[in-house]
Length: 253
Image (cartoon, rainbow, N blue to C red; front, side, top):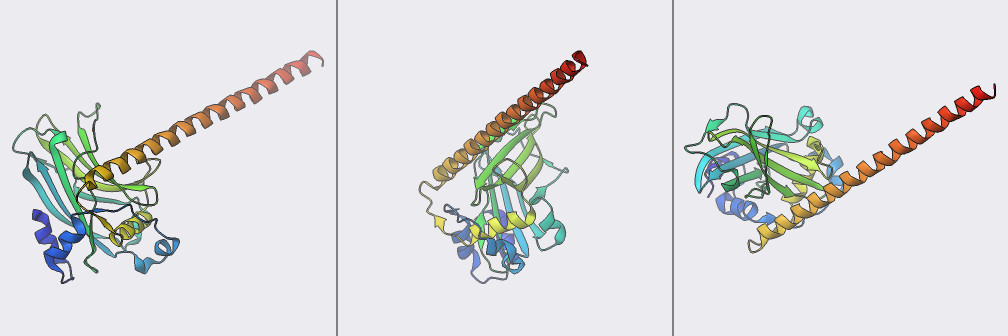
């Protein structure tokens, strides 16, 4: 059992206990259903609170364990980009230097009203990127949901000094942009109520789903760049034609 889950289970009103929570949270959600327009538009169908049970391990040792209670019914949350912070700015120092690729992250989302839960992390990093300006490294634990969106849990750390700066969860769309709290919550609710995939091959399937998501995001970005290039070329052509017409008018004036 993840350390934080023991505390998170005490915050839920469901009587299923740790076994029901484990059955929901340990398997990866199966290929999730698309959130229906009905589920998105009816406020009562969305969780009013989300409890995050977050455990960060490095080399098999737990270096952070936290429970975060988020009010997801507020207008501020629903109207802002979906984001939950388990660690912000204050950070902490690990016992030894951190290798981001060796991090594992468990992020369990729990609806305390129903007792339903889901895994919101790929558990192992799907990408590790270095911010050259600050020297920080970001390990991303992205898990793709339905509706063309993905949960991106990110750990920002300074691997030189073993300092973990931020641990956060956001929802991004297929273009890499942020998703509103309302739409992100609808995707989470749909995944919570959906089927689960057995442990065997689940991580591999989640990884392949992520790779397809990234491939689609890259293709859309390239298409947008080509479209903008064509528009710029057309604008330049129209401008040049207008200028030549003006010169011709001056010549024969």
